[in-house]
Length: 366
Image 1 (spheres, rainbow, N blue to C red):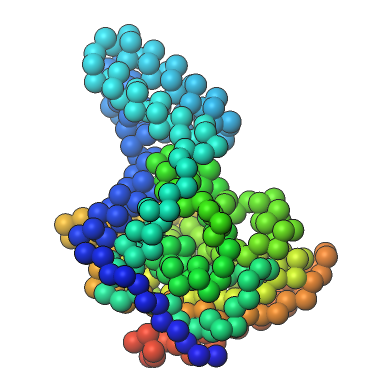
Image 2: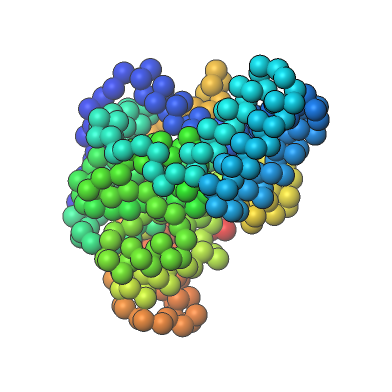
């Protein structure tokens, strides 16, 4: 199949940087901001250390319950504490904590915004030295297609730039839903502003829960997700091409159950977006299994949140695996097709690594 490249309208780099900074803050800093605000509202009584630890404990419990109840609990605790302290700044922090928590208590925090979407189409891609989509694009069919994207990296920059907000990807794939972590999608605080604004006829963001996937598959909707998720973020090491796939078989099972076409998708350049600090791997992977990604990272020296900008982000879509429809696939059938998918991903990687400027690269399967 012939390869096609993405052609995007270039935006001034500083505007792209501001877009990435705003969205990165919303995705990464929302929870720390909530913990700071909630802890700060209790600081006059508990001191900073105990107040922040109390806020962390409250968050760990409240994130598991109905978010309307969580917002009410935060309101009562934070404003009761600030009222007793009779100081202005605890009231301000209580208001911030309550507002942030209330975002999670609403099904939708804003309406779809086509102007923002159009800016994001070009804004994310124009940030990088080069940002393109290639591969077997002519083989793509609308409906009943599943795009398994690799690697996750630290903040999924390739997934954001070339897939979720990639204009060419949308044009080729058609209507598609992008599956992300349930906490981020449904309880992402400020991130919900970006996610809800994305909604439209082209698709939207949904969580990765089993019932969500099956509901979409019953309708024949196309989907894209990163199977490696937080495990790959935790295992990230600058310059190493790593994917967490050995034990990630659920997406293959459901593609078999509903007879989906399964495309491997790989982004070269993701491994060079950030530098990271290693160490404490056993603890970090244990926290990862609890749904808490633990990675210390930095990109640009003057703004660690921003990824390195002199990176070529090249995303390749592989030919689809035509999976049979098996209403109740056995573990052996899942293993068989998972192995075929892994082989297809490695083949895609090896076929295009020289084109991506990495002729000696080796794909590590974790």
